[in-house]
Image 1 (cartoon, rainbow, N blue to C red):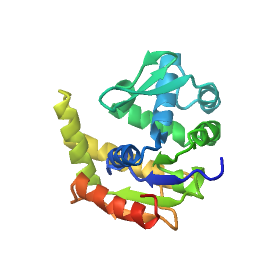
Image 2 (image 1 turned 90 degrees about the vertical axis):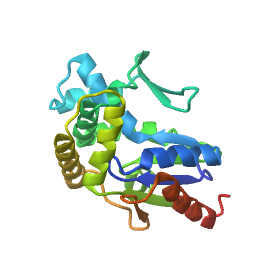
Image 3 (image 1 turned 30 degrees about the vertical axis):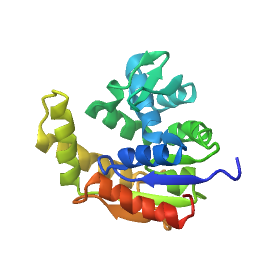
Image 4 (image 1 turned 60 degrees about the vertical axis):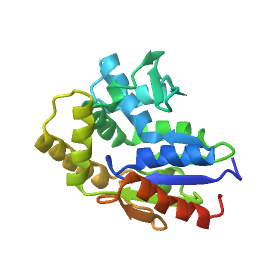
Amino acid sequence: MSGVPVITVDGPSGAGKGAISYMLAKHLGWHLLDSGALYRVTGQACLIEGVSWDDHPAVSEVARHLDVVFSAASNGEILVAYKGVDVSGDIRTEEGGRGASTVAAIPAVRAALLQRQHEFKRLPGLVADGRDMGTVVFCDANLKLFLTASATERAQRRYEQLIAKGQNVNLPRLLEDIKERDARDSSREISPLVPAEDAIVIDSSATPINDVFAQVMLEVKKKGFI
């Protein structure tokens, strides 16, 4: 659809792009696309259907027929259902992250989910959160942001999130998982995790989320969205 403004927010896991994207979409009154959730659901669907992540043809078939529905809870949280079953919690685990990163490296899976992502582009506008939103999916976006942070900082944030949920986690293991995922995401042949040439890069390592949002809003104002 032409004439629909798009802001892309790319970056590695734990950089804060999810929170920033949600805050931005809510502030502007725009639609929100959490593209990572599509890959997480695909990985989770494979577990549910008994499909190995290494079986590329079977995983691609799961992606092509992905029965997923997104909805908003009263607290603003995005709920995700696969075949009518709430998988919101399952896809946000560390295993869910590994599954997403693994299936996202399969070209046929990316092709299958590309059209699904394009369907989120609707008036009054779209904030797209992901890893290749500005480089592949919405390469003509009006504003491209790339949020990053050190692996150590991102591991610490994830550790605190999981501890708060009562989970027993190991910080060194989390850090290793993040480094492995970074390497996998940035080195894959299809849609690697890199900033778009015209993206504005923001490092959130030592910056509170509200200050990061303030930086983002300055860029949004420059584009005349508000």
